[in-house]
Amino acid sequence: METILQIPIRIIKEQELVIGPLAWDEARKVPGLTIDQTHNSVSFSGDKKDAVNRLVAQYERLFGKASHEVCRESVQDLIAEMPPEEVPSSLR
Amino acid sequence: MSNDDNIPISPLEYKKVTEELYGRNLELARLYKQVDSLNHELGTANQNLQDSIKQRESLVHLVTHKVKGSFTRSKYIFAGILDGTFGEINEEVKKRAEQGLESDNMGIETVDLVLNADNLQKGAVKYDMKMINFKEMVLKTIEEKKGPAEAKGLKMEMDIKDGEKDNQYNVLGDSFWLKEVVNNLIENSIKYTKNGKITLGLENRNGKILMYVKDTGMGINPEDKKNLFTEGGRGKDSVRVNVDSTGYGLYSVKLIIEAHKGRVWAESEGLNKGSTFFIELPAA
Image (cartoon, rainbow over all chains, first blue to last red; front, side):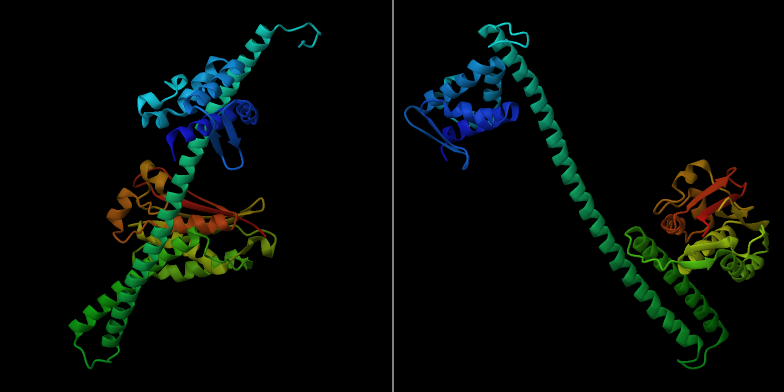
């Protein structure tokens, strides 16, 4: 599976640990992301990096910088394997 | 948006509160993760421990059965030599065969001790609990052990308190295993006492039967006392006196007595000052 496809789910699940089911509700509001909670999968429409950036911003807008840090930490191992140009700017 | 006093909350304040709550939840989530990870480690350690115990049990059984089988086979060879199965024998051969037979019997006894301890430990022993007269059992065992004690020049004394009721020494227990306990304690005191006497006491103290075996033997040093009733807990000095010490005798005693809802303990003033072993059982 393409690494960037794993990023949104990883972020949502990490946020779920902190804020509960609200994490899924907020993710569903992000344009360009389609969430399938039952199968723990997402699909993108449009630019994938932009969609991830919007997801991170969605949480940060509501919960502040700490939530941004949680997003970044949750995908450390995934972005370590990605070419730098493919890493969404919010996670660098 | 307003608070409890119906005073409107500004969006800025609302954001501040939300972020604070998020921070607290985050701390909780991190703690949860730590606990979860520790739980996982504990689970793995527990599984490893259970695997090791199973392996150890199977090894103990394999080794002890093989060893016991070897002892039993050579025992019958020595017994055959002694009873003339292989023809007439001279005095020297007879002497050696007797030594061999005795050594095999001791070996079988040791293997049984280890096997019993293992079975007691894993709860494989089913106790046949019946009303028994503990005093009668003790007296019978003393009678059996008098010979070996006297052969060593040891005096055996009894200090049995007679009460008003005949049944004051009744206990609910398994006579086979309780006899093993009494046997073990008396045999130990004979083994570890070079000279002097062994006193066996019995009394019903407030509904509890207290038995003690007191000797004038080598005593117990404080360091060894800690491991006395543990698995394989042989004392440093006890091995010098009794090279066949397995460290499973007192461990079995403890397991048996605890299964009878009793307790066992030992007292000693120190090395070469004798020792006293106590068992306490609930009177029935």
